[in-house]
Length: 451
Image 1 (cartoon, rainbow, N blue to C red):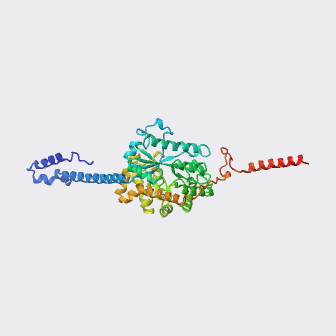
Image 2: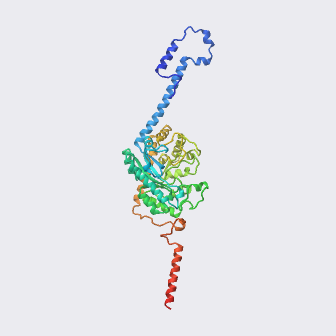
């Protein structure tokens, strides 16, 4: 609120008027002539007028800002804000945690309510160093805690697996809670494991995190930090894309290199998502999406959900709300308002922008988009309608493939051979040699006994 030295309310106006009226009217012409332009400018009447004008201007700005925020909040009451990425930070020990009182995270139930989140993809994330070890177990434990969270807080969360589930939960004023598996290493290169995670409720999988899998390269290949191992996407990786299409599972390209982005866009029958990525042209970080891919996402009906991590917003350690809105504007300019969503990555990153310190601040970002001239329909599209459309299309592709049998072909053993993996179920060269040797011995023994 803007103020002058005195309160610019009715009392100030009355006192100022009395001061002007009570001036010494015997002021001489010489006295007036001796006044400088500055002292003339600082006359009580002029000062009163200036303060009044400033106060009115400040009030008008405040009212305008409030009107954008009110408009944003009303839109968020009508359309669910669907966030594409959020992690839990309590080591799966839900019994020791009160989600109403968490103070050290970007997220708790009061913040979710204040932020008017309508649906949330909770990330079932495990680190890359679990690959080829216990990634599957750890991912299942993450899935378990998301189910338990919905059971422990039924007044807030409602488990969801479809676009229809999201809409039903929103009508009940509950947060539709979906599962996203953040990293292909979580399935241990098994289509059967992928299917089981889908049956447990996972509705998207990020093809890679920050490590190559035996069937897909990750985004660090584009930085030169990791070597390419699969020429982007391997033959088994292509089979996995087809199986995700058959299941009705969203394909998330948030952590892959540009080559994999284009390979998947070439072969997927369903639109894809980038669950937490931003615009490369605004911040040239390899985790962001270049303009030519934004154009392809538009043409194939997908969605890019803007990430709030400072390093992906400004390519520096600091950022603010306006910087995030720049990414929304750019993606809209290149690919249209129909490909934009929210993918804050809260509790998955260490630095978030000023003005977006936690999930309670979402309405402020929506208000900023409105202030920049976004229409109500464009805002509602970004809030949730775009992702709902993508989910419906993915579900439609699933339904058209209902007669297709599950793919049960394993990844080639040589692609996954490591000290922690057995060859059980494979016909490997060692086993063949052993069998041949045994057969030869049996034949030799038979012949010797029948001479």
